[in-house]
Image (cartoon, rainbow, N blue to C red; front, side, top):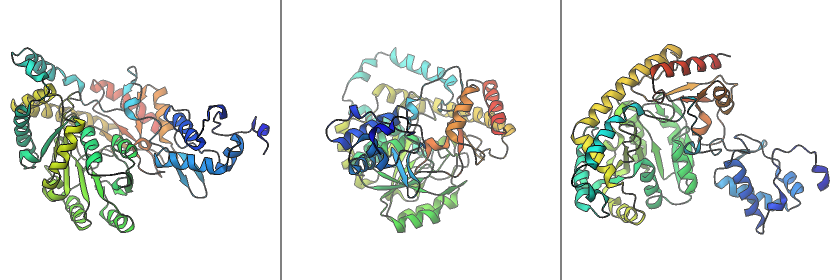
Length: 457
């Protein structure tokens, strides 16, 4: 096709040839990545056929093929044989980069009861006014770290995790714990199994470190053991990432039998488990963590930002004996340790009993809000009344991203299933409804009422 015949030719993506630089495939890949990340190419957009794009740019087909391959490795696009190449659903914009729209009713990002922040404000004020506050800004306070590890050790016992101080690492939140693991335990090309809908930042980090995620089918009780076993037979899987209590975003909580089945499979297939127990405080049935069943094959991460206060970026990570030395070295090199001030505040909250009372208040608020959600959507309400969010399936013909836009027009912020999806396509979209985020019950009521009318249209 002559170049000038493309002037009025419909193409979903027309990169500017003048922006291409030497090493054409890398330059073309950069242009494609930029247009995806900045939202000019929305999720599920079908890209032009490679040969058509090569003709449009007047370059070799192999150059386009290499550029597409590079973007596919980054998780930006995916291909379906016989159908074409599409923009990946979870790479349009990371959640942290989404604009915060204050006028909207916030049912999208998790804001775990910000109205309780006065508790941590009071404690922080007293600590900052103490005579020893200057020591909290020193760089090397190893003795203090041991004290905080002792507090962490006692806290974890509340969740049936009994370990020594030597096995506990304090990190600046769950994300930094995951970074530490990707730098120490895993390498580019490794495969990690996970729920097909999972924590967006885990997906983003895996893509950044070139870790391949293998989606496993799940039901209302979490990952299905039979599908995990099947995938382990088919592929060389090194690890598995699980959120056993209140999986983000589906809210599924694994019952005891499912935890035992998965522990047995993990042991049998010699997998390394990353157990993210950020929502352990919502575990009203007191189900045991998987680390208690297979401690030698589990790295247990207990983030505190949801249980306590979002700005306190502190997580407790428990690792097996054989990983202590290596993780220690990496942690010191990249300095994943939390700020001493944050650690001091967290330890004070726990030691004083205010952490327990904060969790009690949050769980009571969640019960009220989930009861309200049940009024509007009784068929999809989670059985966990302490959950911070709900999972609302959409009618099969509804696109998640389109529903997000429609809800925004009506004044409600929500997040669709596609943002949490591992892999290419989902047969049915859904919404994660952050019932914990509105400031008041009345605001939540107004938001749910709007969503109800939109879903029924």
